[in-house]
Length: 158
Image 1: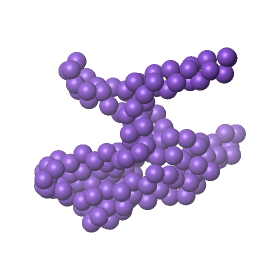
Image 2 (image 1 turned 120 degrees about the vertical axis):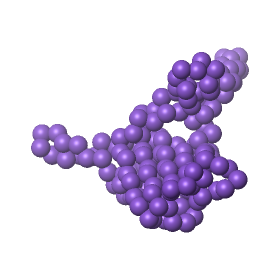
Image 3 (image 1 turned 90 degrees about the horizontal axis):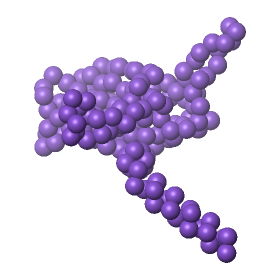
Image 4 (image 1 turned 180 degrees about the vertical axis):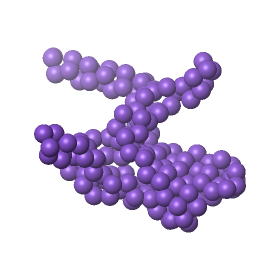
């Protein structure tokens, strides 16, 4: 009898989890990257963010062509806030607090080193741990249509 109650409680927790918009947004970004084009009809380049990364290696984000300018950020701290904080009707979205920002010019890829060293008692150590990280990559040029931002939650492992 208690076994059935445990199953029912698990089902209720899963239903509650599925209704939480933050968890739903996280799940969507884990499954598929989100692309935001300045002008969707004129796609500048495509961005491919990998789903996983190994701590200590480099995370390589590839573009389908050369981008005059590119930026990428990685963050383990993200907030669930409104896109426009002055508009109470604007939709909420995941906003990253970047811990590492990388910029590059005239390249078909951007490399984020997955080593974030800190020091304790004079000895360096890597503060990155296993878990989920929000990665945002942006490729842009001079023209208005030359702007794309890709967002994905990746899993880091050792």
